Amino acid sequence: MSEVILELKNLKKYFPLPGGQSVKAVDGVSLKLFKGETLGLVGESGCGKSTIAYTVVGMYGATEGEIIYKGTNLAQKGYKRNLQQKGEIQIVFQDPGSSLNSRRNVGKSLELPLKIHTKLNKQERQDRIDELLELVGLPVDFKKRMPRNIGGGERQLVSVARALGSNPEFIILDEPTSALDVSVQAKVISTLIHLQEKLGLSYLFITHDLSLMRNVATRVAILYLGRLCELAPTAEFFHRPLHPYTQMLLSSIPVATDEEEKVKPAQIISEGEIPSPVNVPSGCTFHTRCRDCMDICKVEVPVMIEIEPSHYVCCHKFKEGEPIAAEVE
Image (tube, rainbow, N blue to C red; front, side):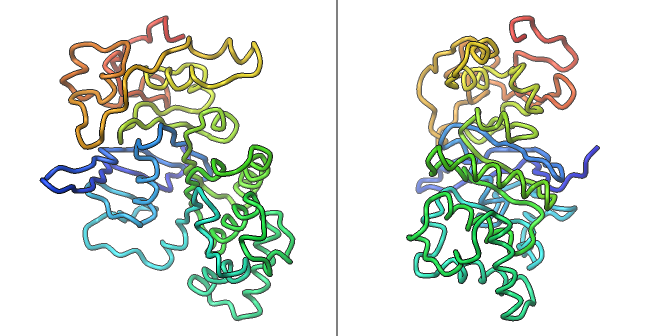
């Protein structure tokens, strides 16, 4: 069994509203992330993916639950992360245009984390900046450029280089390619894969693009209205999707060949609107859109169970220890 680098236990993040209500952005998420893997966290906009990221990295405080990093609960009340923990957990944001300071050149942006997290002198910092740029495949003279004078893909690579400045072990990638042209997405992805292999990094890769996960993720987790629906190794996930919501997402992926079409689930039309996280449906939160909804789904919250080795699903259709129905083959 691989070493667990991060574990979430019943993580909740609620945002209070006037009148005593709250937005249940993350509502009881539990999962483990293993050292050296890429865990893909997938779901529609507003499902809580980025809220999980910001809570794990410390931008938000958890409402409830645990964030266990290398044996320490970072979410315990009153706990303040030390400089080493802050350096070891980094995040790359979706839009490099807004995450980089427009008034600083690339070199200054890369130097800041070196000043905070290392004891390097000025010349050593300059040498390290050159090394970071080379790591992400950019020429060293980029350190003199302003963010507005380089392309979107290059800005995102600078953001990756900046995250590497504190020598992290775990990086959250919050939709790192969604703001980029298709022509440059591949370069960013290949660079991330290369860095992971070279530096032994662990990734939480947040995206709404399931087709991207097929070639990037070790495992895939599906999130809906702040709760996990399904979690499985990537190959198993695409071969045998179990949760109705997962099947709906996979059936909507555009394909280019007949071979790809054959392995897709049958086309499932999305029913209804995503409910508000302020007024979450009782029972299974997906029951208002589910074609397989049963009476129990409307009143009882399903629990995550292991159907096959490392394949978990949260759905009343399945019972632990019972064989899987033929229609999900």
